[in-house]
Each structure stands twice: as structure tokens, then as C-alpha cells.
Length: 386
Image (cartoon, rainbow, N blue to C red; front, top):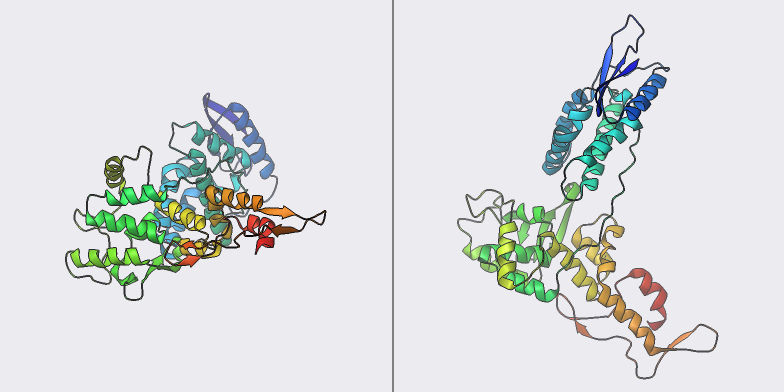
């Protein structure tokens, strides 16, 4: 075996894995010469063992895998994986045999992708691509197409806190929508906490105005019921009377104003509304979902109920909003100033005249109990106040 350099960043690894009289294999490698030598040595060590999966390349496995994804997973998942495979993964890994993939090759792919001129949050995109690659090769391994692939190390990625709108900004944004169509669409996004794709794929058959709920099909093809608050119920009832044509069960609630097909882009509608409202910061549709969760937490609603409303599988996903609802945490800590410590027992008692609960209107109407936004803070700091 040998490493032949075509340019400083492109090399060919030349080898005869089945002996001198066997088939000759040339593997393209993009990266430094040192990385190519390291990959050369890893491949050489790999061929010290007998291999049983040598006849399918990554590209061949990818074609069958995408057919399986199309049948067994959501259409959006199929579209995303197809884009990742054909756009980035197969041009790099396609001609290779899976058993020749090593950590050095995966590291070279990460280095190449991160050096490309870039889109926002590229590190997350690279991690998703490697995750897709790993799932595909595990699928191939389960069918005997290849050996179990090496695990790729994730690229460090910082996920910041979500940006949210204040309740006053939400009100101004909705009031400045330029049509009843967009007013109803963005009101549904906010009052039901929907993802953009969930709202755009909503059909009239999933809307029950009499019972007051939406039947939402979200990520992972999971279904949930989203209650419709009274304000939104009035908006959707009025919108349904203005909708052109019959409200067929399979008909989209929010089709594109141009042609009636599925709507995909609402950036221009948001920009027009925020400019009229005088909001001078970046706003995107998903911020309404973030605002829905944050405002409910600030109003003292239970985080488990918010998890169900958002359709999160894990409570840890919902808990990110406890860090955003900072005013509620500040109010909870301020309440510590209303208690006295007795002796050295650590017991906490309330001052005379201190109110145990304050009655304020809840997000969906009616009184509620004031609580802090973080479950850990609730249990550790405010348990003795209850």
C-alpha cells in the first residue's frame, strides 16, 4: 500500500487488500498528508482480520436505505436525509466500502465540512450528517450489508437559550398582520405552541372547533391534542367563514395564498408585520412557540402540562424554558426576603401578614397559584412556603 498525493489536500490510498494478485483498490482521501498516512495505517491494520462484508459501497447502501426511510419514516425525514446524503455525505464517502471507514476518515470529513464557507450553525449540521451516516450504516449492518461502523465523535456545538418575544410584542406583531389569513396562522402558532410545519400541514379534519382542540401530528409521526383557547377559537371560527371553497377534511387550513398548495415560507409576512409594529430585531416563526412556553412558565403553569402542549418526548427539552423565564425566578427569590430564620434549626417561617398565594389571571383565563419557573427551585426553596 502507498499514499499518492494529487495536491496538498487530495490524496489516493493505493492498496491490494487480497494480496499482490488480488484486486487493486484506490481510495480517495481529502485532508492533510499526515491524516492520509494515519488512515493508510488504520486500513492496513484492518486487513489483518478476515472480512465478510466487502461487496457493497456506501452509495449502494444509501440507495436502499433511502427507499426504506421513505416507507417507514415521515416525508420530511426522508427529504432531510436525502439532502444530507446526496448533498454532502455521498460525494465524500460514496465510493468507499463501509468496513474501510475509520475515525481518521470521519475526522477528515468533519474538517472538510467545517472549512467550507458557511451556513449558520454549521457544527449542528455536521453532527446531523454524521448521525444520519451512523444510522444508515447500522441499518446496513442489521441486514448483513456491512460491518458495524465506528462511532463518530460529535463536533462541539453551543446551543444558546431560545429567543422569545414579550407578550406586548406578540400582541403588536399579530395586530399588524396584513391579512386575516396570516393573522389566523400566526395566532395558531402562538396560542397552540405549534411548530411551523405542524401549522402548515394542518387540515380541517384535524380541527374540532366544537370540542375546542387541534389534532397535531408532530415529530416522529407522534400525535397529540392541542387545546384551543377562547381567543383563538373566535379567530378560527371567523377565519373558517371567510375561507374560500368548502372545508374538506383533507383540505389545508393554511394553504398558500398563491395557488392553494402547501405553504412553506412566511418570512416576508413576518417582516412586513414587525416593520409595521416597530419591532427592531430579528423574528422568526419558531419564536412564537418559544414565547408560548415561556409565557406559560412565567404565569406559573406546570412544566409537565407545557411539555404535553409542546409535544416534547423528554422533560429535559422543555426545561430549557425555565432559564428563559427569568422574571419568574427573580420573583421567587425575592420572596425569600419575606421570611425569617428561627434560631439554628434552619426552619423558615412566614412573616405575619405575608400572603401564601397571589391570585392573578392565568394564561387561558381563571385564577392560578404563583409558582417559580424551575422545578428544582420549587422543591428546594419554596417547599416550606406551601
